[in-house]
Image (cartoon, rainbow, N blue to C red; front, side):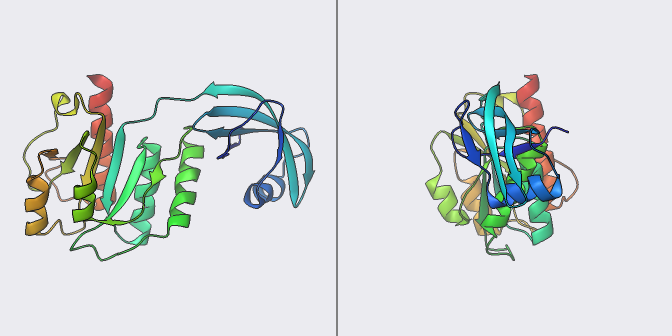
Length: 236
């Protein structure tokens, strides 16, 4: 079995390191690996194969042997998602990571019932999804921000792809061209308020588009929207 674990620091060939408490428990007590077993460690700089050189139930040391994957080109897709309840929000974090976004921004709008997110748990979900989906760079999870502040602080080179339940326009390849980054914006359950919609649609960087004739739950809308953008990017 190929075990992949996220290692946030730079890795140097033939260097050694003690694993974190969490990784030590996983390696020694959950997976029950032995001395001499191999573990892959990855981060935005690439992926390395390591060997366990010391192992006890509360102490594991590894030696980094060689680099087996180079750093990959980061996605230019980010996700701005209005907060929803815990279970669908965790699905959103997991699936958005699997589908390759590079940044996730939790948004509070007028109609969001949930006002905050557990950032530590969110980071764990994102890292686990990165490990399982054979990627190198976990997406950044930003601090929760109000919709008006999010729109005000946007980078001028970012195009907002607004998944709008009231739009009849399809997303086209030309909508995605010549953009340094793309931000998919998904509203709350019950949609944005009329005043919020006016602000969003009044922004010149916004492209409204439809993803379904049906009303979708937020987690379904996220998967559909990112998949659509990925499809257009990959086939045009």
